[in-house]
Amino acid sequence: MITDIYSIDNIVKTYFDDEINAVVVVWQKLTTNEHFQKSCEAQLTAMEKHNTGLLIIDTSETIGIPYPEDQEWLVNVLYPRIKKIKHHLLINILPENQISKIGVKTWTNSCKKNTINFTEVFTMGEACNLGKTFFENAG
Image (cartoon, rainbow, N blue to C red; front, top):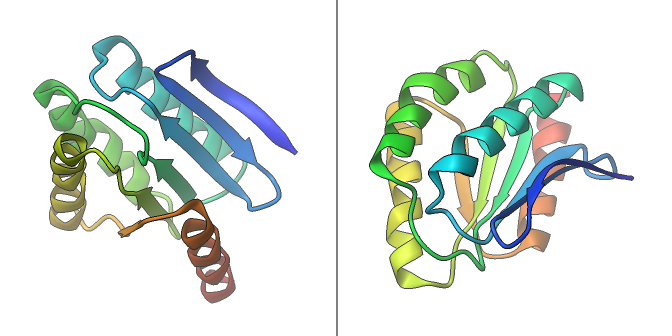
């Protein structure tokens, strides 16, 4: 069953998928001060509510890059909260757009610096398979 969490047309769709026990966010536009932090907060709240450490971030079709202040907010506010989730894995499906890919790569670097369990893949199928392995190893 899919449970909608935070969705704004043409910007972001965030939901919990109980079949794969994951919070999934599909970004269409990353350059949005108004919705970036709200969506991320909703993602984390849903991870806590549904007792899952798996977050799949689909940026495959996204355009734009997050604002610098949103990148700072990730490091200073969101990442410390994610680290409190004992078994967590953030899986990013890489964007096709080259400019967006550069912006999303900053997540990779900041996650590594903050010891966030983070990896990158190219398709939703890869993300789901990796998520399944994650739960098998965490259990």
